[in-house]
Length: 147
Image (tube, rainbow, N blue to C red; front, side, top):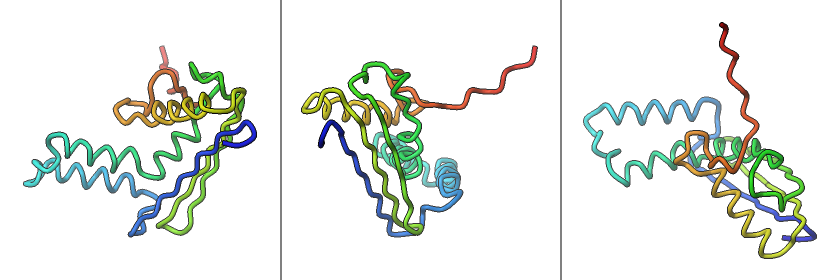
């Protein structure tokens, strides 16, 4: 934290070239094949669920997309923040970095605690839309249904 801003920087370093188009779909397909195959028991129970959460919800692309879409003007309980800047960068297919800067009206411990709360709520892997109702993203509304 510095001068009324909270800085969150993240870096993902992969051993293999996974930061490519379609990787998430490939992972989901492979998990589905395991789920329906002779090793289905590997995905059962707490450890299997935990592995799936990390593989599908905490990968670089998903985390970056979620944090980029957080809309502070619509989120409840985060009025402490007056602005949000987000950037991400890929370095080849093995390294991804992101930076989240939150401008705050209340520097200090309160802003740091609310920053952690924001990250936890936005990245909640158990929510269908990757976050509690308190954190709103700028999701694209569904096409209207014709009468």
